[in-house]
Image (spheres, one colour):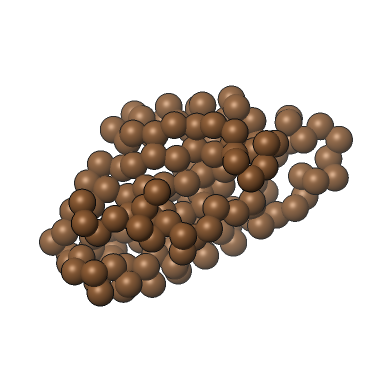
Length: 147
């Protein structure tokens, strides 16, 4: 797990609408409203995390792999997202979420990327968008500044 991954938690989606649906496995995991709120939250937190990384010697010239986290409610959605991310050259896996057996976690590492704020914020927004297209919630990222 990445050095800063604990900043983001590994939370269930902020939208609880699925809890009352009779067929949770076939239901939508991330509503549009939850996606929009999460995208704002994640892209706001990214510069804050970057500021903390600066204190550990990470500069604009640094290139680091980022560890990513997504959640969803079916194995099929998890597999599809994992395949999409593998197509970008990312390593990763998916499995039943440890804290909630009705959810699946997709996690892995990116290829090394520039640690300029604008690059990381843009990537964060893109991960939110990709996750939403696969009905998965991007739960954030972490890294180890000593790679």
